[in-house]
Image (cartoon, rainbow, N blue to C red; front, side, top):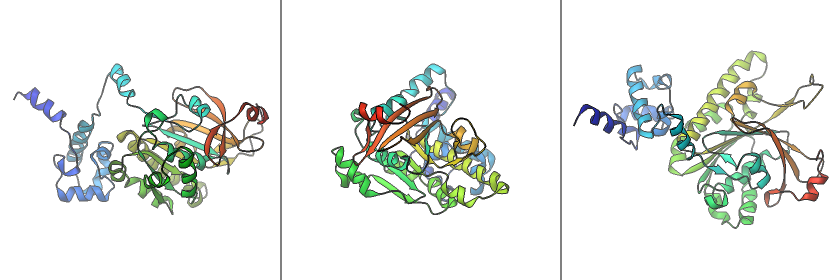
Length: 336
């Protein structure tokens, strides 16, 4: 075998577990798992610095990460090749044609979509609907996958999932089985859950990861300006972990966010999401939800996206879940 052929065979090598990677024995694999790296995919998205606590030298860490990345095909590519890779990006329906239109067909895999708004605007309701929709076949806008739900405000209700599943003609018992749930009690616990989620995602074919809400614990635990830098640093790490998981497993990542009012804003909307620039830069798509003047109607405004224009659409939340509004409801809703 020539040197070139040998290099190509190494590049094409596929590793199924940590122990398969060159330079990793049982002891090192155990230390990596303790750090939250359970799969080859998660190691491929790691940095050298993150492997230091496992007692791995910089040179060895580079080799391990490089092997993991070659296994799942992470390298420099031409833009035409990227265009082909973009075809692997899937879309998940929200349940509303109007909302899907605003998002150019639904929520993208490999990115973070953020829903923010005041209490009662429908953030958690959308999360519940997505947990059901992700289990639909692709021809119905689903991804034939499971959902991972990290709940920080105790808002998840299986009864609501059952209602939505029945309306879509799905077996509620099977739908509930395909939602992996964890309640986070502190911001550190929230981060720990996500840092140890890679194996669960891989084993259960998870195609949707939800953190509802992203900022609740951070907001209550890090009070005052003197703690702002520490809070933002942790939020940054948390969100980057989420995007790595979404990319490694071609999954949809969704976060909900609380809001605050800025009293010094005299023109325009004084409502702003928590988390500042850290959350704003890491969330690829940001959607602001607000109530219409009355009834079940909600207004969704696409605030930012890498390639989609800003815009607004109307939908409603009923006992069936997320639905489109009638022309009469559009006329009655405020501002339309």
